Image (cartoon, rainbow over all chains, first blue to last red; front, side, top):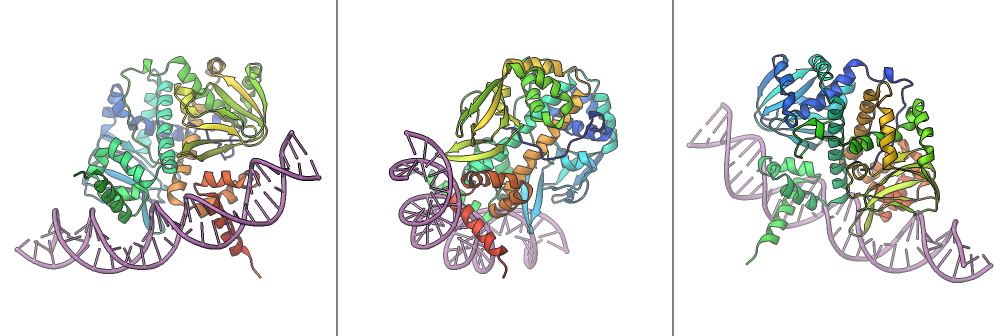
Length: 223
Length: 223
DNA sequence: TGAAGTTGATAACATATGTTATCGTCCCAA
DNA sequence: TTGGGACGATAACATATGTTATCAACTTCA
């Protein structure tokens, strides 16, 4: 994919670039995210289990509020979570997360800035929260892992590809096409998630998603 | 920002993850992109100058065709370039690049797969191309640079933030708002680039961009 | 220098999508 | 058990945006 120009000032030396915590958080958030992709790293997970807060919460529980600074990495043991932001009083869903997935509001978590997104459960869920300070410890241990750099690169590349594809899909595809892709590629989302959340994720009103479904249903009916 | 689940199979061992070239290309593409942010690295650039092909080309010269595999890293000495893809016969501009910026169709360059994008000049330009094999050499030398990992992390985080912001902007903002942001934050683009390319970048027709401009002009007029 | 192409504005109309309102179904908690 | 709320379908209308066509100003270049 295409590379983007970065419109930011840049530091004069590398040494100042990554205060310890910043580096740590960025890495660890990737680590947790990919935990299930790299089973060999599960020993680290188990070791830090005791520092995690276990939450057993109902649907619509807010785990991070838009505007607040993210203090925990979030891991989903059971249930389902979405991230969204508010635009003119309306929810815009950015993504869904399910069992065995980790997430954070990355920019907020890494850079200690207010989160652009709210994170909330959309099913009764079991959640683990790992506070930043332990994340920092964990990353220190991880740096001793062989192939650490390669792991990071792999994660970065994967992430970037995912973002780019979401971005391009919004530019390229109509809402109807986006819904069909969702049906084909991630049917578990359509099956499991309430339709108004799907509509919000696709970027259309609930009414319009209803129209799309109705149109597709007609197209399929053959006599 | 939010982290995305990666829907891909995963390798059993790290050792197999990064064939030499893949790793190299990913890194080097970031390196060139950030060259101007890290002047200290310019010695590497100068050293590899001799392996680069210099092109002095007119506007509308295609540097990489959608569907072809990217073979070169592209650096712009003078002029202006855009990346786009074709949807139902229509151009969708993804990004603009200017003097002293480097780019590639990253996914294609790194993974040796067909490019999703076409890259073409939109002004008469002076371009340098660095073939993959030299990119591989360069990255080897770069690995000896102190703070190499931190540099990579910094680049990754910056890139990801940029992609996310572009993505969110499409979800959140109307075309009119997107145009106003462009005017405020990157006015050089609006000044320099023909309006139909801007319209394509904003995701609207040329006619509608004209309407937007006309509406904003009326709003500004005060007697 | 003149003809052809490029760019941008605007009008008229077509289509896509949003908004509001209504209704039926289902589910859960008092 | 039942009543309110959440969810989804649909209709009617409003708005945003696309499409096509036309015209004028401006390049480009033979």
